[in-house]
Length: 43
Image (cartoon, rainbow, N blue to C red; front, side):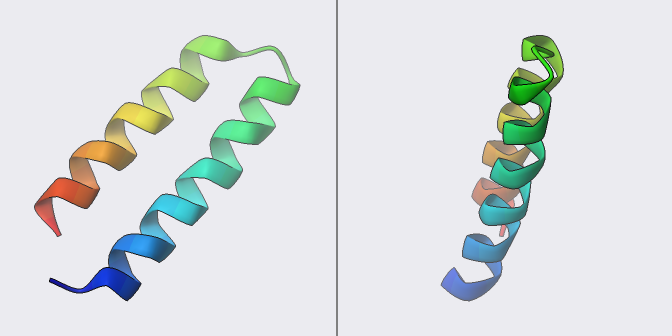
């Protein structure tokens, strides 16, 4: 497992999701979190 790759993927997704939350776009934030979780499981 490449924890560094997984870390950066999750960190970047969290940054994008936080921007969506700040814009009150919770549905997009949720989708970003789900996609990031799935990607992290694949890595």
